[in-house]
Image (cartoon, rainbow, N blue to C red):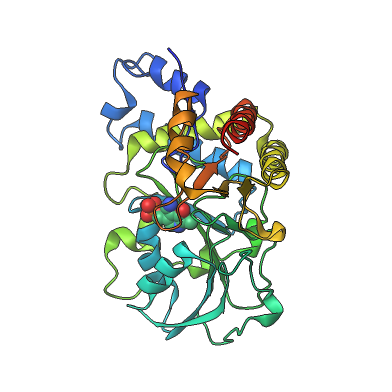
Length: 360
Ligand code: PMP
């Protein structure tokens, strides 16, 4: 069996150790005689699996008691609507920072529920950058301030947390959660689709401050109501049990790697060496300002666009897959999530050097 190095932006590479554990327990989980996939979500076995996953995530991120963790469905896209439904709490306006594609999608959805004040627009220009907070036009009456710490498509990442006073800070951490330690206390709400650093697609993690729960609009569907999901331990309806289980295995794997401090060092090293290889060549180019380059998603273009297809074909032959940039931007993109081994990044860099020698 040979596994590739998978640079997909999501669904993305999972730790091989986790896949092996899943394989071993596929037919018979811990002597129960059935797969986790076949268990009732109300049975004591699955309830224990779910609770352990939640505890491990709480430990990893240092989630304080003031914040509740929900395991939901509907992806980050579902949260684009759930957030205004739950957090407007009678207010008519919300602040959004626009740093790219995913910010824009969150903004478009929020407009169905409230007046959106775009406090700043970034993630465009060459190189792409993030406007400093000093230039943002914040609304003191906003129900919350929403931003996208890592724009998965363009590879634009905040390496700082916006400063807020009373207004709750809401972050779409889909492609950055668990890549490094964060101070959860500074956020009113954090959300992420699982299919990057957490586990398989189908699960959405929401971490929300308790005082923001319980103010949903009357018409909010029950599955989107944080209070009702919280009261039901995220099992108001049948949850994505298998994705939740695998996420739990990923959390335990992360703990074995030494937690988020340790994985952050590896992630930084992986990203630094790829950016250094790109910057050190006249053939490859990354279009993002060095102050806001993503650790997780590294887009790059080549001197000649017509070589893109050849690059992808040759990379695939070398066991390096899913390097095609998002259809909206073209070029290449290497996603370097936690489960991408450093050896995979080394192999990519060696391939890029070789390709440049052949075609540059
Ligand atoms: N936000 C960001 C930053 C993302 O990267 C993605 C998915 N790539 C989404 C939102 C949408 O997530 P989902 O497909 O889980 O709805």
